[in-house]
Length: 160
Image (cartoon, helix red, strand yellow):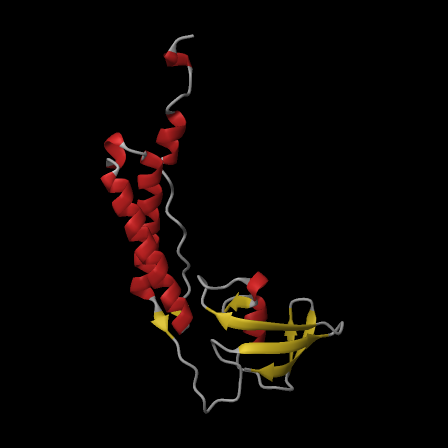
């Protein structure tokens, strides 16, 4: 079979044309740990880019690696440029960005989440983005407050 009728090489060209990672339209609020995470990711993206470049770049080397490194470098550079470091105001007794909040749901379940920036949010590890519906239900509330939230009302039991 002639090479003209196969798709070999097409997958490499397709992979090299990766779309940009979407960047949120919300302000890029970060905790100190979130800023460290962005710095780490940016350093890793720079290293991956340098490695892909030294391997020959898009002309001779792995075009997929170069495309991925370039995409990640653009994303993390943009996130670093727009990062707004947020610190907690110790005078306030309401839920703020960066707080760990424990609440009880109507069904008796008790949950704890830390409210963080979008890039550092990981619900499986106990953190949610400040733009998540549950975070919006908690922000500005105090211990003992009841708030409507997805899945029913919640009562704040602790703020750390």
